[in-house]
Structures are given as structure tokens and as C-alpha cells.
Image 1 (tube, rainbow, N blue to C red):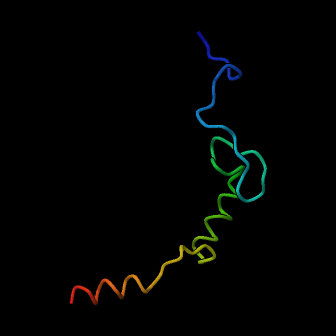
Image 2 (cartoon, one colour; image 1 turned 180 degrees about the vertical axis):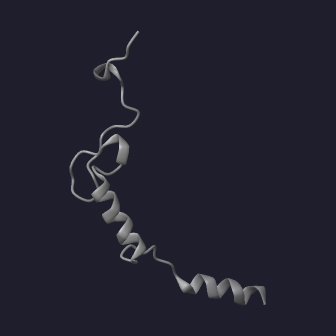
Length: 66
């Protein structure tokens, strides 16, 4: 019994690529292509994306330990 690709239910709904807005592809999810995947990786590696942190909380916890 062969499976027909049209009858397969996707595991995740298709979402737009976060880089260009085209529909995502299964092989490069959530991106549409290797190019968009590499663009996103480059932004992380060069520091364009930064997770904000507050230094006040770190300093306060060190002072309380005493």
C-alpha cells in the first residue's frame, strides 16, 4: 500500500518564513530555504539579535549573600 503525498496530514501548520514571508518548507522549518536559514544564523552569530538582560538583578543578588 503506497502513501499518496496529497493524503498526508502535516505535523505543523505552514507558517510564513520569518525572513522573507514566503511559506515555510518542511526541510528548513520555520524558514522557506537554506538561504533564509543562513541569514538568520548570521544575524545571531554577529550579535544583531540580543536577549536583553538587566544587570541590577545580578548585582543585587550578590550583595544579599553577603
